[in-house]
Image (cartoon, rainbow, N blue to C red; front, side):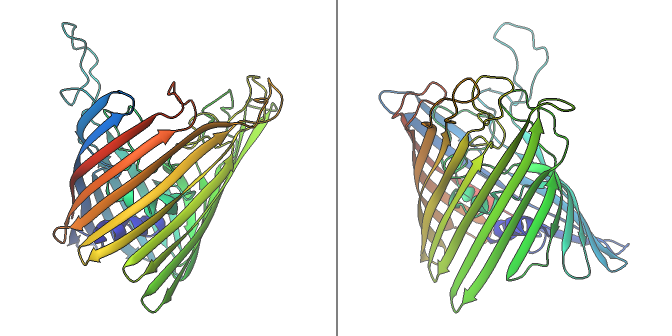
Length: 407
């Protein structure tokens, strides 16, 4: 766990992800060094929908995919240079017997599609300046909301899988859509000040088209930023973070209507001896819910409407170290998407909550060896609104257990 935590924190701070997480390091003759590290995880997950709903059993990857990361670092002209590649596969076949999709029984195997996903999540370079600040350019985890997921205990487990979604190809959800919006791995150029007690990161990102409507023209980059502050007092450690996002999307190559999407997020983590507490939340307009810009951002049915829906959510988490190698944790979180009160067809005509999903998770996390982690979790996820055809009050129980091996 420590190795991957350092890896993820390295990503969050915008520095070389191999710092402190090197599984294998080789020094090359040209002065550069090469390293390889990562993890493999596998979980058994059983899910059951309430009221005689379907049950599902699967062996799959958890919230964190397996990772194989390759990095090279060197120093030239006083600059610390680096490149990083991160492959993130999953182990399950998404309901198929084999790793390829195949065709219906008796039909020709034409155009086979991969069943197990291999995400090329990271491809970036870093430039470490003489003052200790860093420029990161390439594909990497976004700034908006990244601390919310990095501090989530289900990052090392399963969390929620989505109601009825037990045989999905990708990772589980953890608290994605159940407490925060997923930041995703995006193309960016991000500047981060020197790591320390306080750090500021700001970046220009590949903009995203809206998942709803005709707003598909992105003339300028999206802007994301984050400020974090760390304080140590004796055996206690405190971390505070705030972040923001702004993007403009148009429905025409020139002129036309534009929609501004904005968001804010904040959180605090207090580590008090053997007790750890995390509280975080987010608000936004024109962001959607669950996954950024994946639908539900725009209100109304009019194609030219610029009205957007608001979203919010958050989670609270408490973890306690029972012994040096074993911790237990409890967390609760929710995510909501609200209607726009502007009259139809440009708006929804009311301010009702359009969707609201929540989950409770309890987990046991045991560091079996220095590199091997044993995890057991139980989650109840549910909805208070009609989402994807699900009736209000639909609930699902998820029980999981598995291994995570870091190197």
